[in-house]
Length: 156
Image 1: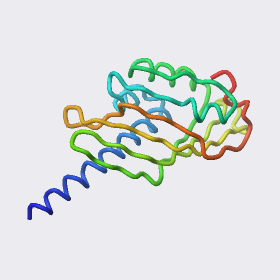
Image 2 (image 1 turned 60 degrees about the vertical axis):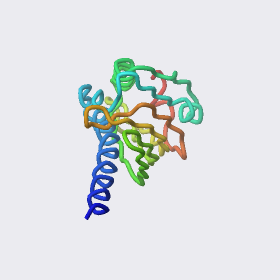
Image 3 (image 1 turned 180 degrees about the vertical axis):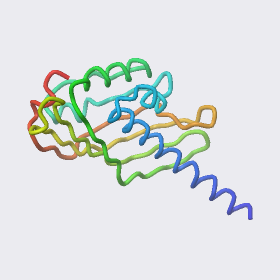
């Protein structure tokens, strides 16, 4: 029975870790800054540089939950997005976890949905359990492939 209890806790933790990435994606797509913020530790780091470089633009490393939320909500203010998370693989080590997942991110100018920029990105995520909630400590985003009009993201 003890092994079954351990497996149930590990399964619950793995689901909760993936749920953290869902909160991140939904927070961006729904323009819900509180939901987006709930996915990050106060001292989190977000590194979009690898994906940005492949897409042809520079995006700085963002440090701190407040800075991450402000930067993402500001840079995507005129962009409608949908994020789809797939293939998450989660590894739990006590109150720490790592996850890699694929995230497909569709970007459309809010005023012109005939143009789009679609990115398939690999997310490498480090998380920690804080007050029984999993939060992102660090996320590094690299691009696998992209298609569409790159000027959709110009100026972000």
